[in-house]
Image (tube, rainbow, N blue to C red; front, side):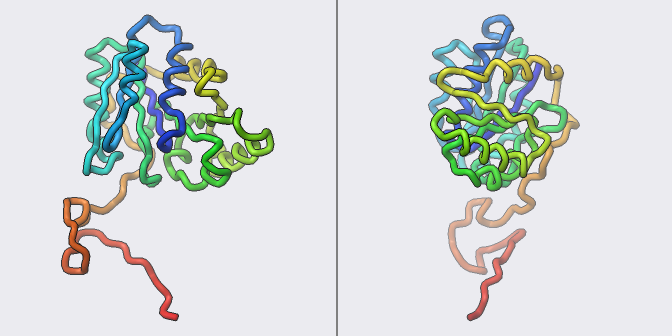
Length: 230
């Protein structure tokens, strides 16, 4: 089974890109599935159900969404194998812009949209920096000059990634992404593989449910800001 990780900011068009790409895959029906990792709520399963695509959704709740992802990704792979899938796609939103779900040896896709601002590629962090393919959506709404500046800023952060422009409504450009998906290697498990970037290094009292403010209530690894005294 092939595994592809798709990540990107909320509302960047990840689900539309996945659906349009699946439509271009030359594989038997019901042999591509999706596992959605989200924080509180999601309606994307309705769109996958409409297309008859096997899917599962997990909510992180009060747990860091990326920690939730890495704690469950191996189970997701085994779910895909039990379903007899030939391709499993994971979809997740990098809500904190600090983590990345990308895994060594696994094809990784980052989806961002042209309407998020020309400097957005410099703000997304490892989710974009360590991706193999960066999909840019909503390019039909901005000018050619804005598209080029946006692509230039992507290259400034990740010069090695393949940049693809895909229209999430018409599917234009999705054919090439489908080809990359079909050409990636098969896996049986993710055990002993490594993430491409580390998770946050701290567990503090607030991570574990503390709500009171003040030094007395702060435990674990902390980082202080430096303020000038003028």
